[in-house]
Amino acid sequence: MPHSQDILINWTPQETRVAIIESGAVQELHVERTLERGLVGNIYAGKVVRVLPGMQSAFIDIGLERAAFLHVADIWHPRLAGEPQSGTPHQPIEKIVFEGQTLMVQVIKDPIGTKGARLSTQVSIAGRTLVYLPQEPHIGISQKIESEAEREAVRARLTAVIPPDEKGGYIVRTIAEDATSDELAGDVTYLREDIAIPIAPFLGTMGMPPEAPGLPGGSHAARAAISTARNS
Image (cartoon, rainbow, N blue to C red; front, side, top):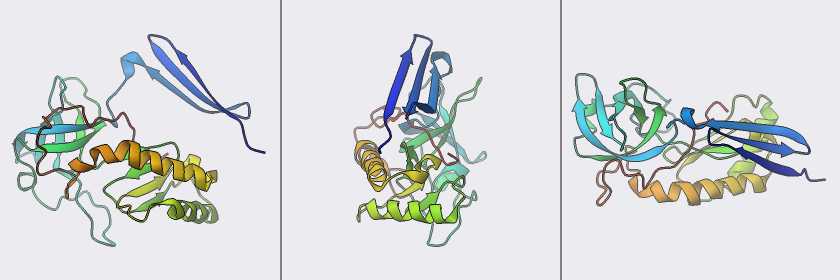
């Protein structure tokens, strides 16, 4: 017998609460307070305003009061087959970015005090059951799914619904342990067609477009209120 699911939303000027109910039991509760709303997970088309070789960093205008901060260690680069993820940059920042360049960036740390937001050029987009990695042809499974049999089963279900032309990768969230093939396929379609396709033209070889005519720095055209969920 299929489980019934309801979404309950309670809104006030100060706070929004969303509860997901399945078979009469609360499965998820999300609370967002107006004064605490952060930028982490947002994606912007930003413009490089200054490169600092001595600090191996750059300041990026994403339309906020203060320029955001991008360190060379947070610049995505394509990995060769079998190469582990490493925080060691392949090149110095002055050989990767230049002033006036437009970059697709994602906020990984909110502004605090006099410091601007911290950015990364590696984009991840969270759905209900999956996290989409448009730059990484990789399938990962949440470490909280401990059963090897369950891990392989959900990997097989996901692999079966990924389109043949897919160039990105996915991380299976904990909540997807019992997800059906249809549920996974629905998330894949949503993440690819509704979210990723609009920003695809601006994701270049280094996670950055060499050119983006007509898209000024700080533009919100490619912004998506999303959150990373690698540890979900």
